[in-house]
Image (cartoon, rainbow, N blue to C red; front, top):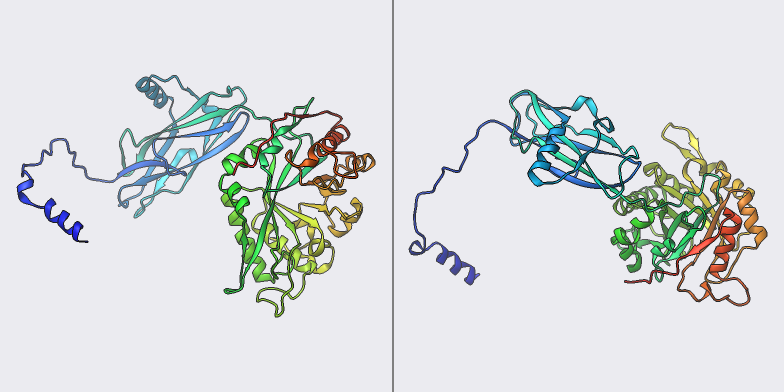
Length: 478
């Protein structure tokens, strides 16, 4: 504190400051209300977005003012090729505009700034890449805002916005057809890099092998001091999530879904013993995680819970199908666009009873056909696909996973079982696949198959194709 005080005294010493009149000739004194464009990402003037060819997107804009409006002003936002021409001339670039017929601005581009407001409601602009655009090239949507009525004034700079659309190279995809078997790979994130799923493609179709990657596993954490429950992420899962651009986005760019597994963690808290209010609160937390890390859904595994006496507040004494179904329902109710995947075990084994039905948004009672997207069998589960249909009534046949495989220990499918999966267009669920496990190329006793040989069998039987393994696996690098 003494040093700061001395600095202030020295800084204000008159002998060190030469007093001269301030030159105000460069200042412009203005009156009235000034306006400027800003997009939904908070950007003014310009922004660059990367997207694939043959895709569509949107951007929202608001017109903002430097002070509250004294009267209503209307501003028109229009496509204006002259804005891009001016920019190219000023910078020496040769950017090409996205054609005006590929751009649609709602409400004829009208932005209304109401009295006593400083910001308009968002105006939505939609754009479509027709397929004629070249990968690796950047196209521009040039926009110009002009006051139609009212006293809001916009400078030339604040009237303009350039939206740059960079067309990315097509990285390929995993879409092998609506009737093809889907392969869900559940990996142990503690020792496996999710990027290893990019090492496997089909020779003829050039499609990626894996359709969904399940990150195993997040946990249900009970805070006994507060009586609340949270999603607890171990250090490895946390690293992958916090670096999604490196580990997860490359998968999603190829159409591979990324799913977060959730399970118990040696306390009373599990996915199938929460009371209604606890389930609602936990569902909200899962939504925050999915929103934050742009995940595609949740995989529920009702294991590793420890029964406690007395029962902690917010939980039932024992697991039940009703409580398991309740959590699925609460999550689906607030995340209808994401997958709910049931592991056919313990409290998520059977959602067929009447008390596993809940009211949907229209006030109708619905069962698992409303809140379960996929169900997959445990390794010890020898039920056939029709038994899964009884336990999850209404779930389509191609959303049921049978004959699951544990790749690390060598719990393999026979060729007959693989044929069954193909015939029923079912889900093939594998756990523990990793090019760095000894079972990847060395048969675990007493089997003859390896992870790699089993993947080759699956490709041959499921898709009548050959597996291509690029021999460039990804180490765990964290």
